[in-house]
Image (cartoon, rainbow, N blue to C red):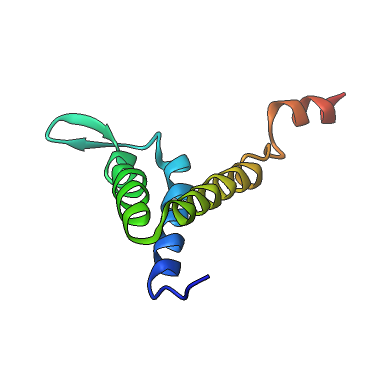
Length: 98
């Protein structure tokens, strides 16, 4: 594989924003009286401009597919790590009382 100068940085930023999209999707901000999800500002940048355009045109379809799989894997890993039930959940409390 060739040694690309900025490909590693692009991949890292893409994976970072892909992971950040999940927990911030429900966060709303007020823009001129309209409530918008904060992820609409970086979601198109990550998924449309970087992956679809720059990676496929500059690097190749194979590298763009690999970056997409890295993002999907990182999102699944983040969901598995951060979506653990809390200790003080209702089910845990009911088991302690029994």
